[in-house]
Image (cartoon, each protein chain N blue to C red):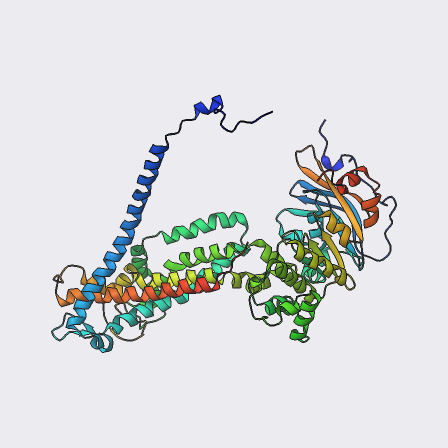
Amino acid sequence: MKQDPINQPLSGQIKPPYSGYTSSKEAILQAEKVSVFYGSYLAVRDVFLDIETNKITAFIGPSGCGKSTLLRCFNRLNDLILGARVEGSIKFQGENLYDKKFDRKIEEVRRRIGMVFQKPTPFSKSIYENIAFGAKINGYQGDMDELVERSLRQAALWDEVKDKLKQSGLSLSGGQQQRLCIARAIAVQPDVILMDEPCSALDPISTLRIEDLLHELKEQYTIVIVTHNMQQASRVSDMTAFFNVEPTDKGGRMGYLVEYDRTEVIFQSPKEESTREYVSGRFG
Amino acid sequence: MSTNPSSPPSPSSDLFRPNRQLSKWVELVVKYIFAAFALISVATTIGIVLTLIFETVEFFGDVPLWRFLTDREWTPRFVNPQYGIFVLISATLLTSAIAISVALPIGLLAAICLSEYAPPKVRSWLKPALEILAGVPTVVFGYFALLLVTPFLQNFIPALQGFNALSAGLVLGVSIIPLVASLSEDAIYAIPGSLRQGAYALGATKRETIVGVVLPSALSGIVASFVLAISRAIGETMIVTIAAGQNPQMGLNPFVPVMTMTAYIVQASLGDTPAGSLAYRTLFAVGMTLFLLTLVLNIFSFWFVRKFRETYE
């Protein structure tokens, strides 16, 4: 008997409240029963998740588990994909981002919830203009030189580029480009920074620099980071969400949240067997 | 278990008996065949350039260069011939400038619309349709200019003569729109989506993303398409010959008949110019001028693309 996969009971699915962890009231982003579809294809199903202010939350899980997809819901970047649809609600400071009224203010949402991508994406502009671009389009009225310097300092890039701000952003090394993208994201003064595997294209030394940077940034920003690297998750994050994927009977693959807890709990005493297997490297 | 380095090959290796000698010969022959074909195209180009140079040098043996550059008229077959190339150059620049002022904005906006705003379905038939426009023979465009555009424009501009630079230039512009649009669209479409997402993630609107990020990144390709379109406008023959007239006169008045360099070449090569005569050699002098103009443009384009091309992973 074929069942609609949407109404099919799921194995391994955890309904909130999560065993052992209840979210505090400081949640800046709250996902409630979020499902993401590409056309009729269900990519992520029924995620309940609270992202806490000024913490680093890591999303881990095997490929195709929907962690990047979910991340892109937080700044509505999935809107750009034809046929993508989000169900449920994501509350940002208490307001549902998928409410109609945000359709016209989507730029404001994206300014306040910044994003850094897997591959560095510097614009083909000077280093200075790379930072200034976001500020300009968002109507920044203050001193641009000061903003550029402050952003580059926060991204630990200032000392390396202060003498060549006129050079193209593409002339930098991969690690520097990624820190430029972080500086660019910081420059528009967001509340949250989403990071989609920001270190996966970088060498280990550049990766370490960015991890150090994350620790400094969380003083001011809330950070959500998707990573394939479990050591990275355990090193940098306060909270960890483990996602898994299971085949649907339509032949697709559907991601879901397995367990969400403090990072040390996820890595040392997870409640779920699949979490334990994943973090100990037995699959994925 | 012992391994013997000089052990006989396993039985199945008898099944492989490649004819290495034959393959080597084939490789060699194929290499020279390809080289020969490559040589044909290069040799043809060199031959053309050499012919141009020799005949031009002979031309300047009879007509000093300063007369070529300073004469105020172009009358090579008159009793007192004058060889002012700028008469022809001014006509070429006039028609090209009109054409470019039509083709560049429309072509670029069409390219932006196609790559950024059009839904994929629309793009998939609109782009080929645009490229078909490029396949319309220019002689058709020429008669279109002469028989439709000029009479139409005369309703508004009574001073417009039957042959004129204006309608030739306008239609020439229309004929190169597909070139600009198609090549610019390729350049814009090639900009990775990650760059657009980077801009959107900063809170940019679609227009801000296109103007602030996508177009600057595609600049080298867009400029290359512009330069190619300008070269095409300068070198285009049929439209200007048919619609702009055959009347060499100096000046930039778009309402009167003019003679472009290409139109002169058509006129002079139509038969009544005896080979080897001075009038015959003017053909090559004009051809050389045309060649140098487009060469300079192409070198500029090459330099610009090299300087401003950004590489994305």
